[in-house]
Length: 251
Image (cartoon, rainbow, N blue to C red; front, top):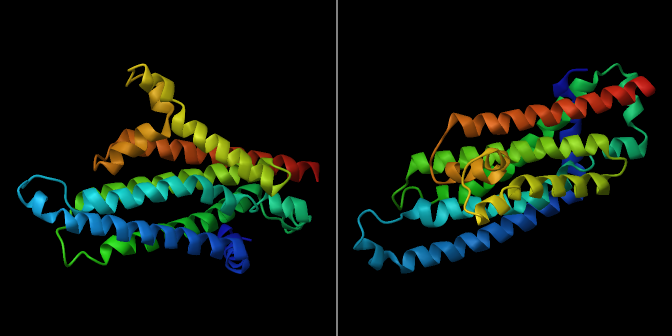
């Protein structure tokens, strides 16, 4: 069985799970409401901004803040989406069936991760559809929007990998969701004390997810930031694969 076969199987499970539909509906409704509020504020301040040729535009005041709100929701949504991908299989007793079918642990992890990543990127695309619907009626800073979108995609991919890893180690989906939430929040705020002390450099700031996402949201694309997300994704998936391989040997 190829990783894509596992991906198709996991996609079908996501489509029939009410949780995925409820999360998508509630979060998109909340984002749409906030998009409407930010758009109203943007339109009401057009006269004041007309006197500032280099002032913030639609992407700065509406597009990027909307993606920032999506990032905040991701800390809760991603653990809930990923909590059952492997822990649910283990709890239901169906994980040995995949092992018995001769599917390597690496293909199981990769297939399930790709299914989760597809759902998260679709969630991001539906959110982006809101500001993109007005691209013909206002000035668009495509470079800044592309950088912010890249940052959100990398963040979602990283949180998804962490969620899959936690699901691989946990014996219950609730434990997996809690662990993924705690790890994600720890990665985001690990440098909070250093920033309060006025330290803007050093290893502690490099470890923080916020240090790598915020420049992308400002339109600054750096290879260092992209590599940081890629390394964390590879590390999380490698740990998940190692855990599943150990389970397969015990079975």
